[in-house]
Length: 240
Image 1 (cartoon, rainbow, N blue to C red):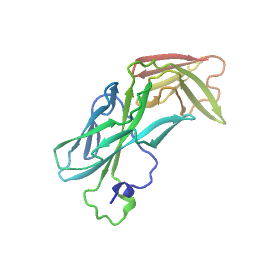
Image 2: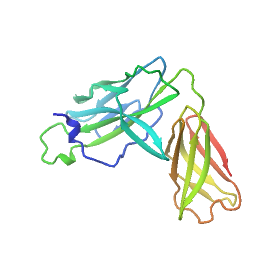
Image 3: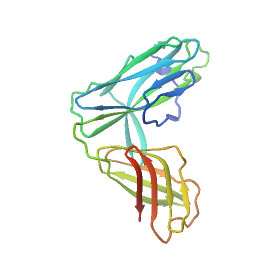
Image 4: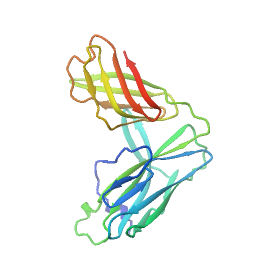
């Protein structure tokens, strides 16, 4: 039986993770939490570990990751595969999953994917198939050409009714990862997007984030300053 059919339709609650280290969700640990391969390298490795005292089943699959009209999009792909796609994890044992780009076309710029690692119940006999997915982790994967242009992001603000949006458009090949994002207008009023990860602007893509609650007149009467931590260091920009 194809166990993927047992996974319910869920709103994608994937963790947008980046950096070094391990992603832990209950019993299953995955590391690293980001894969980056530079051409001619076409393969990377994820290490899965079961920290529970009983066996668990892990499934992996690769989806193409794009950003369309300011929103994230994940689509099936045959260009990159994970092997093995399913494994039973014994307690306290490490398992290796290879992530391989099998496309014969050369990498252009920076290609973006996500490996979904699904933890399923160890027993296939579950009375209700709609609750069979226990944990999902989402690991960013990037394949890079030998020559890539740096992230080149332009920023703007827009409104839809009472909602304020931050818009980012990246003209470069490389992604930009944003965390600890804050906006400050000419009056000194600050909008914080929190201290954690906000998200990515992928290469040659645009992304949009809804700002938290803010004064109605935010940004009126002068430029807005943006400050954030990124994968390239501290960022400061002026939004006119």
